Figure (spheres, protein in one colour):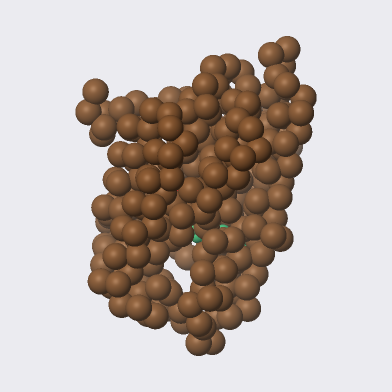
Length: 296
Ligand code: GRG
């Protein structure tokens, strides 16, 4: 099967899984649930659940009942971060994924609550993975990753340093720290959870963390590039937002060509290290390559 066809089949499968775990829009709190579902169903590349699923399969994972709740949970956490990132107190963005942002449609208070709702519902959802077939140790390790990587030593930590350094010149070391936490952490969690739930050993999980860290950093640098080279139609949100928010990025520090080269080097290193693990990595390899050339 062609890579693009295979990818679009996998995205459709992930979306079916997400829909199946969404909360029902009912009760007095219907409005916040609508706002949560509006945000998560606005589309998006779904790359975190895809990386999780592929790593699960890579290490021989077979049970849908075990991995599916975690696939949905990861996209809920990612979506919460975007909803909060778009709020007036953060990037103050009006468009995301080609649609009005959640706080624009539902108001700021509902935007905050929908983000909080998605974060909590992610853990409620992941807990549905406990079934007769699951291994308790693996489940607890996966939950630990799902709570720590988005937290203060992961995504929130990176975002906090990013916010604190807005309008200030920044050196590469700090920028790398921010990117590894803000963006790589969720990709690391995705791939590590896939590996853990499939029964990978500690050393294998450590290797996967390193590979995911490189993929995440490349992904964020490409995001910086697209912010200046793409169009609103392609990326579904306004371009030049980093300039608007006075942010130091790879592009402002190193220029576009050097940034593109960095994306290539990091992606190639991730592929080489995946090959060392020694399993069949065809789809993952093509996925990583496709992200080097992504336009949205
Ligand atoms: C807790 C108040 C509060 C805020 C949290 C942590 C955080 C705010 C925001 C996360 C920071 C962030 C947006 C990081 C950038 C990572 C990134 C490139 C996101 C876009 O991911 P894509 O391209 O998005 O996968 P789609 O729309 O395709 O899912």
